[in-house]
Image 1 (cartoon, rainbow, N blue to C red):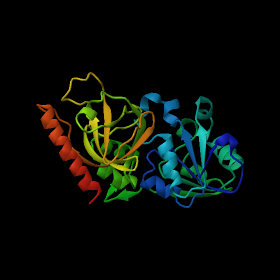
Image 2 (image 1 turned 120 degrees about the horizontal axis):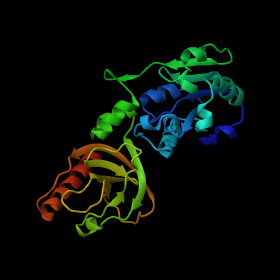
Image 3 (image 1 turned 180 degrees about the vertical axis):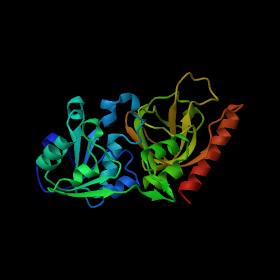
Image 4 (image 1 turned 90 degrees about the vertical axis):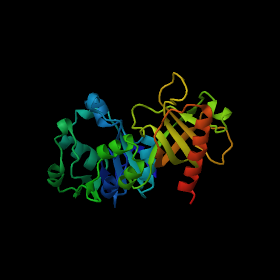
Length: 289
C-alpha cells in the first residue's frame, strides 16, 4: 500500500473512503470495503479544533496504517490536519479535495461522519453532488451492540481486551519503544521488555494479559508493580516466552488477547515469582493450545 500526503497525491479516478478510522474496527472496515483509497487525517482533527475534547486514541498512526494496508487498499492519503485546513468549508472539502485533487468517483463514509468547518458536512451534502456516487454505511452491530471507537476505548481501559477484539476484528494493538527498567525481572528469572505507555493512547486496565509480542507469546503486566516501592509510574512489562535477545531501543508491538488476572501486591518476592510462573503457564495454554 502506498502512503501519500494529500498535497502529493496524483489526481486519478478513485473510490475513496473518508474518516478518522481510529482503531480500524469492523464498522470502519465496512466503510473501507470496496475502496481503493482511504483518506484520513493526522493528527486527529479534534487535536487541532478542540484538544480538550480529544479522547485517548486506540491506535497510533503506524498501527492504523498497517491495519488499513491489511484490507487490500491501494493507497492511504493522509491530510496533514492543521488550523488552516480546519477552516475549510464542507463544500470546499468536497469540491477542491475530493473532486479536484483526488478525482473521486465513489465516496464512502459512515452515517455519522461529519466534515468541514463547524462539522457542517454530512451525507446529505455529499449526495447533492453528481460528480461522484455517495456510499453511506449504517452503524454496524455485533451481538446486538453498536460498534464505536468510544465503546472500544472503554472496553480496553476496563481490561476487556477479548471483548474489544470482537468489535475491532482482531486483537487490540499497542506499541512503544523498549526502555531500560529496574532489571528486577532478570534477577527473578523472567526478564521483561519494558514499554512506557504514551498517555495520548488508551492502555489496558491494570493486570496481567496473554498477548503476542515480536512474534512470540508473551505474559504482559500492565501496572505500577505494587509489590515493590519503585516510585515509577505506569509501565508495560512483556515477558516473551522462549525468547532470548536484546530489544532495547526497538519498537515493540503487543497484541493483547486475554486478561488473566488483576494486578495485586504480594507479601513476598517468592509468592510473586510463583504467581509469575503460573501466569506464564496460563499464557502458554491460552495462546498455544
